[in-house]
Length: 290
Length: 167
Image (tube, rainbow over all chains, first blue to last red; front, top):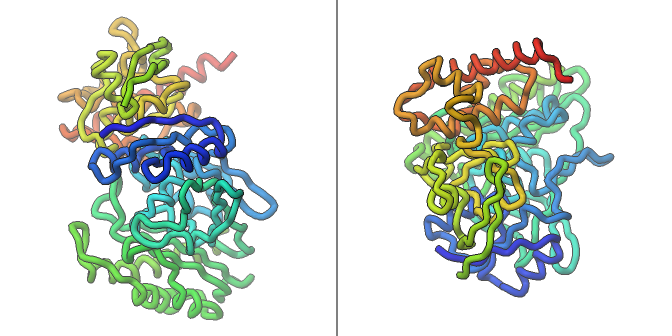
């Protein structure tokens, strides 16, 4: 393992360096994925460009008229503790708090986790359930792409050569909405998900009928997916156990899990249906309690 | 790849050294500077024995490139207290019998310090403490007394704050 470390000051400098150095260069932010990959010989960059200190790459959480914008360098620990995420957006701290240990969450960036595109990434389903949009900076300027389209498969994204993921945006939830994130692993902490589920549910003013739902499922397909059939079925149904069970079954039909050291495909299938049902029920209780 | 001059601020002191770009902070601390308090084990941020504070926040020094630590305040266990003047967390670990083989303890104490400093006016529950130190493994499995020590330290800190309100 050996490489040159570059520490540019701005995104433009970093993008210029990446263009000059070509495919032998990788960006590094928190490094908690990349350094492990380098140590294992899975990544062999000759140049590593540090983007963790760029003056114009944000690491803050900003509330805008249009929702929230999270700088790509935002650390998980800051999401866990952010006061604006403790109510309707509770799925964000719930997902952030199960990423590694505190030491990783103090330095790992949300942008790095998205770019790494692990099928088992915990924060990605949470952002999918919020219909997150990405702001991406390249040599030609800035573009936007939905997270849903951006992640293509294990380790693969729509990031073009030299581009930097700059921010993640999502819109506020409608009234009578709540969210939840649930993860099942083989132990309670420091664990890669066997299945993780993120849900956002909106009810009518009476709290009895589902108006809309967004359900995202991780670790049971090459990339986290939105359970489109379950979402469509829920609209107009009563907010009760039977509806949530149906949504769970529909979400599980979309899963394509593998069997591995953590769980069998059959068990993962079963967990999707249970966790989706449970996440929706949690949302319903949170709306009722708000 | 060629070595370049690195300037690190460790426990308030400036250290200059020539470093390979791929060296981690852990490697530099132990093998270049000779500070052995920070331990080496899994090298994948699973075990937490390499924990140091970066601007007061606990991080795994095994995955942090030393070059990325330039410009930050690094605190290792050597910077926390002296045998004559222990940090209150160190004192509490001794009093509670929280140290067995000792290998995880530097990382455990720094993880605890980072956690307690996040919320100065708050005595965390045992569950909150357990979650906070989940990234630091004790293979003697002496977690009960470690949680005791962190809890005692948090209580004392709060009592002290009440006695000596901030000026």
